[in-house]
Image 1 (spheres, one colour):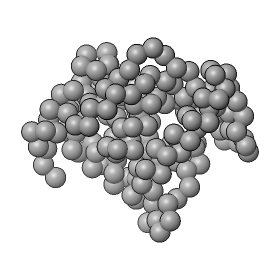
Image 2 (cartoon, helix red, strand yellow):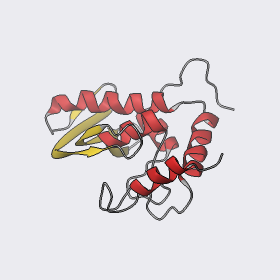
Image 3 (cartoon, one colour):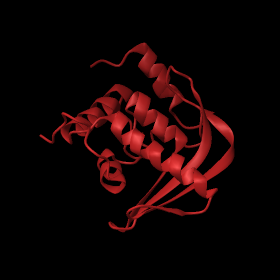
Length: 160
């Protein structure tokens, strides 16, 4: 797939100092279209889709908000905390949605692993299939999200 002019404009907004200090790409110098295509292929290869992954992230964020910043247990072996901050962030893609600033920490006690993600990450994955650049400080690999959050496979999806 070829990078369009619109995709280049979005990639420019993803850079450091545009929306966030460090941006969303890290040191990844690939074209945005290549980043999106590679992550989409990986998610499909694993038998999942972006909506299922982001939906599980949203579930933990929504459930964790009940703890008002403290960790709460979610059966059978998860612990979740959601911290909210002042301000909002615009989506760098064409939708230009404005998102609240909150950070969700999910601990999978069975695996002894945890993830930290923000509201904008949920949105970027769900609506744009964007997990950030390979060397971005806040990138989370699709496989880690699937494993740690124990994302269920969507119906009619299977691992190849």
